[in-house]
Length: 231
Ligand code: DX5
Ligand code: ZN
Image (cartoon, rainbow, N blue to C red):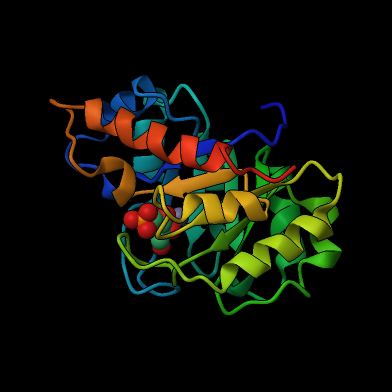
């Protein structure tokens, strides 16, 4: 995985047909997505359950781009090796998942993955500063994690702008996750985000039998963001 700040669209398969993950992934990649975002939820850190390492391993062969695994679980450390072995390219843990984020990030890189750090909407940037040299991606949650289809929280725009300034020239992606549409994507691209996760806004209107709307949705979000992207 080489680093650049071009806009990347990462559909969340939380909005895909759960009985057809393989075909859904092949459809969104054929329709032009850049990464595939995989939301792991434990019913404890967030009030919803999705899937664990066996499912992540099963879908891995279908992903030709980048497997971006968002761990909404606590504790997270005991599961890092399992998700790394399942084939994650990026493993993102939440800052709020435990007291030893530094150790968690070391473990993720030690397991051979790119390390991501996710922040809930109520979490400030103060605790990120001393971790910047250990991370490859910061995921700014623009909804409270747990569910797809929620409303974008506008207060996160300023957070992304501050984070972009804090990152400077470091090769760290800024990912935004939650409520991203063709309307909200440009707000975040202008503030400095480069990876745009979108679940419902990508999968709406399409299916594995009719994947063209996936492509139209991806292109609409991409074009809206590229038109205003900050340097
Ligand atoms: C929320 C997840 C998101 C979610 C995004 O907890 O982390 O990735 O699937 O879904 P939309 O784009 O529908 O808000
Ligand atoms: Zn996510």
